[in-house]
Length: 126
Image (tube, rainbow, N blue to C red):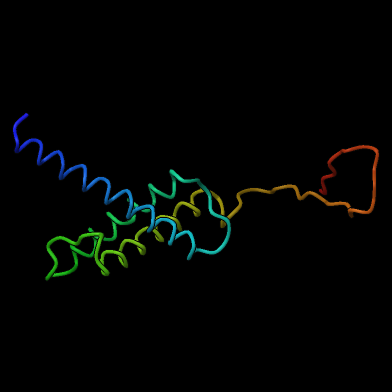
């Protein structure tokens, strides 16, 4: 391979690893800031962090006159990346039904722990 190709491949690999590592940290911080249970696992956290960083840095670069390119490894990149991941997590919870429940859901009545029953039937209130 040509030296230019190897150097370009090395730069791309470095950029991908930086974005993945930074996206993981930003996604975890956004999940820590948002209260309540969070849907998704490690892959969703990574995707939200990377996507939020791309969205946050892109929006900041669009509205800022002085910044042509905002890198994720900077204080302002960290702040706008966390904000973007927070917004993505909010919409992820909103679309996942965390805040609103459609329709009528039957509530399960719990029995006291000291009351023992022979049957394990579930009782629903109407």
